[in-house]
Image: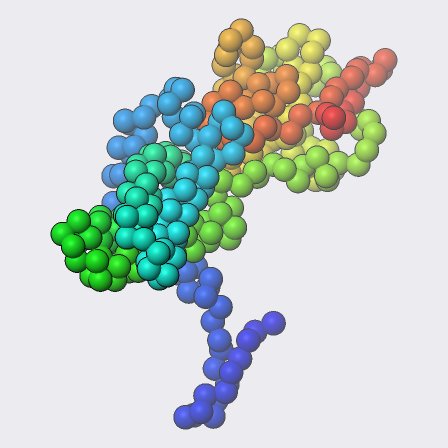
Length: 303
Ligand code: FES
């Protein structure tokens, strides 16, 4: 329902715009596209595929790493603000600011890694998110320098400015996560949409050997691959950002066949959907299969 308020001056009903809608405009800020293209290309080139990139995405912990690291920096800076406000220890405030600055380094590395594989609309918001957080880091660095020169009051003022910038950055990070679903699992709902029990999928003879195809179960798209008499089935929409896995390529990883997403290169083990390479951090929903006597492949969600 549209929220309205009556203007005192004109008496007209004016639409009250929710805060998040103001930031929706950032998603359409095409003016940011040129720096985004340059920076994200550089990040992807510098990192390349491999263990470091997977680690920065958060593959080993099964969640994006960046939000967890960001909590450390923000927590330190928020605590420094409380110490400043209550004037309970200038040394403690300095230590907290320094710890926040130190943890910002891996936070930025993980954030840039995730950001380089997002949709353009998410990257536009992400770039402003990064700029506000960079402003926060500059304020805190300045605050620390002022305090070291004995200018405590000015140092506190600059730290409050840093906290305001970091809060704005945090809000934009929330916008990316909750409104634009960056970092969320885009395949989580699949297991809930398939009724319990076995379902007929297709005849085995209709499936090409070794080539992924898409088949529909009701209104759900499934990635299906036949390797000899074995049929493996996963949700087709990639857990990273929903890319079509059936258009990906099959690659061997530690002797096991994996499907590589055509959009950003996440790799999932075909047998059970486990992530072998990011940017995806969530397992791809997998299905159990069996072959009926008349040659029909049946599926049900894996437990
Ligand atoms: S959609 Fe990004 S890796 Fe699949």
